[in-house]
Image (cartoon, rainbow, N blue to C red; front, side, top):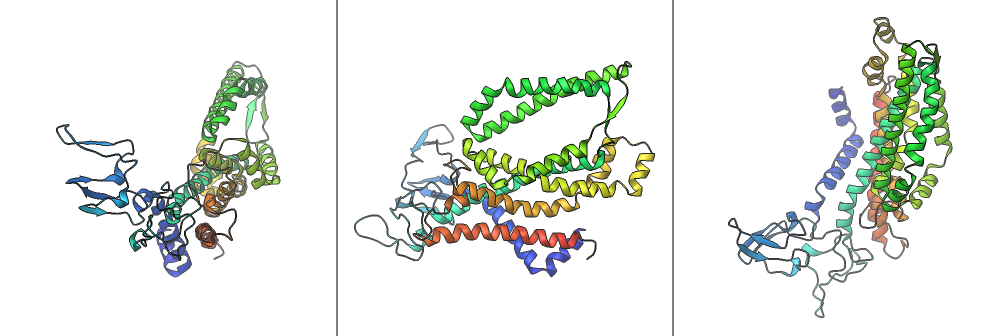
Length: 426
């Protein structure tokens, strides 16, 4: 499989270019603080060596090995570009995402003149030019794009990872158990009804004030509290299910009944797919306080349905294969059949959907951030860089839009080529 993938990369230049571009974006996100920083990577100032880019902002005093104070520097207020260094190594982009209007170049064009502040109007040297211009606050656009890649790629990868986890588990359960294969005793079924009511009461009704407070605090806090409520709900259901199992072992309500797992999950999929996803994202994101955890959770919880449908169809095909029938005849339990034999062989279409899903998640995050209801205001993403009035500064529309377009295009190319590669007819 690895050799076949290598041959595909060599034969198709578009796949090679798309893979290289995505790898470049990921490396840029990982090395953002080194690639774009308003502080030098290394400098020698007044006989002392410093690494300002790697020094925490709260540190303003430096000591030698014996603990003696050797220098006092305010790392938050130093005019780094105006100091006279003995030696200095600057990052490739000598500007940070929060360095606003230091040179008073608000909406500076990348093709126009750029000057140092002051009455003498000295031109900026090439080393300190804003090569992609500045935004409305005078921040360097290239530095914003580099640091914005972190949020955009993180949302794309994490949201699709969450959607893939939910889609694989629910789709596999729907296809494997169907409407008749999952059978429980009547005592367990009867106890699950009051267990569900009590679980809902203690997990959501009793904790509704905590959930409201978390929603007002941040989207990430709300997602954490919601997961805690879901865990409490699952624990209460497990307790009542265990009591039902004990009653069945004692001879009370031992008759088995079937649970319509496939019908239940399929109806949920149809319900979510009938809703306008982007509109639902806008409504929910506008209600809660912005947070990257909220955006990841929303996109993941609303984007698992496509993966679940494909996994369900693949599991239904696998259920009729001979090796699975042989495993059943040997007496393997359902969990072994499901997690060791069914799910690993049903993941072929999932990789294709994940490739397309990353681009969709980046687009959804860009739309939310463009409307200022996605990530917090102190964070940077490509969607937030897009101006509300694009005709006033063409570079603010071109470069962030080009970054989003090329990333989505690269993921779509990989998805299409992966689909053709995994198609047995080719």
